Length: 386
Image (tube, rainbow, N blue to C red; front, side):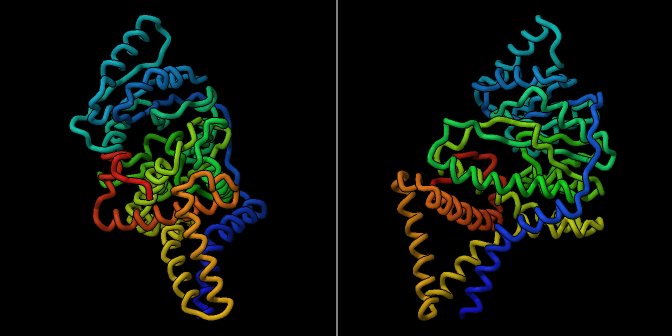
């Protein structure tokens, strides 16, 4: 029984520590840099929005103020029930009156069909060779477009991801542990880019060659995973530009973080056919990266459950190790009801780890039951706090 426990423990450590460490060493021993050079390729921005009228004007002003500016901004309104259309009409009229602004193209998608369908329609309308994907919630640094575009001086690059950063001083009780998770993810992305391709992009800020875009399936829940995987299958690289920053507010509480993680991890399950597509196109190394980075995280909840049961079934030190695990999960339950306990660094990190694995378990259930697309359509109302 101790062999089972040790094997489970090694599997957890390999997923969260071993793989990032291996990438770190590989990036320094055998780096594969790409060409970065200023260029003037036109860029179209595509943004899908659902009931975002309260932030659309400021977001569009942020995008129009990029230096250099985009050639056009395409906004796809996905079944909006607020006054988003009116807001955009006012913005367009204001821009025409002042002059000097990018073209603003508005597409209404009725009824609501989901983000994938919205992006498909937006890219189909784009006239530029490069597409910059953006969300309504974040704000870009002024140099984002230019920095991302530099990587396309290398013909081997098919997509480049920017970096999502959270503003300080506004965090709720979930921000600290989520921040540690983000640091780990950013380290993995940097080192994946330096040694080949990143397994996904930052959905809030990434750019692709328009010619490489393939229409997303209706069931696709995470476009910033699916699109990069499809591009990698063509033999092009997906790289990472950490200086191209999109700013966001940190999650206000763990309920928000729970919803985001369930949606993202459900999308990973739904993207599994794209891994088979990588293999069919001779991209076995990329498929292995997906397994090590993404898929391994999805099976860890069941590994943890097996380790707990095996430990409690043992004797002596093994049994006590099981009690420690059980105590950790009970502490996480207490932290759900008494958030003040999360202020301890180790406690908050442990709480987020438990939250992440509960989200992974929930994601499998949603994927099996075909509820993946409902998570996007219904938005935050689908999930409740674990």
